[in-house]
View 1 (cartoon, rainbow, N blue to C red):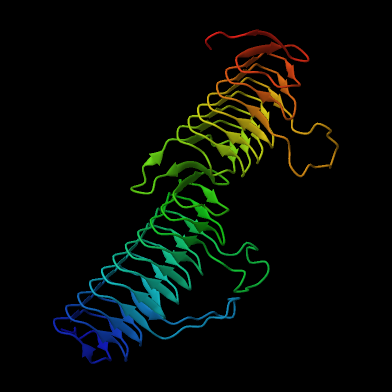
View 2: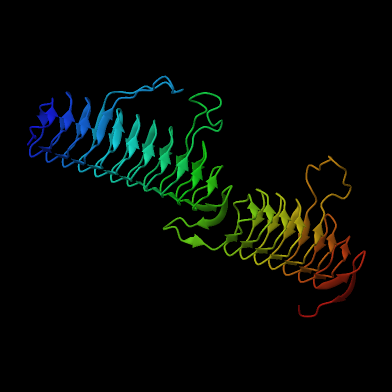
Length: 402
């Protein structure tokens, strides 16, 4: 049924379709069966609408592109739009030419979708969402109110993007003109969840199953199944491979942790800095103002108190205790700007304890269950179960049954 106040120039209309008043439909439009088109909808040439689609008042489908001479990017598009079966197009939504929308997808009120965009099946593009050019969105993905999806962006299946999220694609922020190879949007993997008001910067990849916390600023790639938070966003938790349950480790918002090798139950507190190559076991407690370099291995159940520096070549075995302000060293003949190819290994064996302000010289081994007294300077190996104090550290006794 076509209302007499509608202007319809196509004859390709399926059965039981209802076109209401003040609708304008141009030539070369194909409309399926059981479609409802509400008043004041405009549909341009080249649009194909599937079955059981409903289009609400004020929507504009197949809008041509007019740059007005102000757009830096050369606009190229085909005059076509395809809307799959069972879709709903909300009031005042604008869908430009050269767009494909899958089946059972909801396009919300006032949404705007630019050219060369592909949207999958069972998606939600919510109220006032803007999707810029040359973007692909997978199946079952939900993008919530007033979020902006930038041009040249890739979004996978089963992604959730919350309200007011901003994605960007130009690190020069428009100062260098438009160059396709430099204007790169984010790549958001399958199953990613992004919290409200997060900012995803140009060219960033967010790995499968990861979570971005609300208001995070993601400036570098996020590995799969990680949770990131803060500005700049840093890994605070790791997620398991099935269902997203949190693996129990904690990183304080004010810590800077670059390594991805962190065991369950580990806690890293404020102002700690852990470099990328470090390996940290389970149930480790790393306190404030600790620095850990790259070639470092820390076992399970280790405690490192405030103000400790752990340099390349240090190995802390399970159950080690390192007191506050302990200083490890790794170069027996240090010179400024002179670096060793490989640093000597300093090993602290299982269940050993090192007291506050002790200094451990390069290449020594502190034995199992040994204790180094506060302020001691360890210049040579300490046997298992020994207690050593002083400068240089000397053994004063052995622990029986330790």
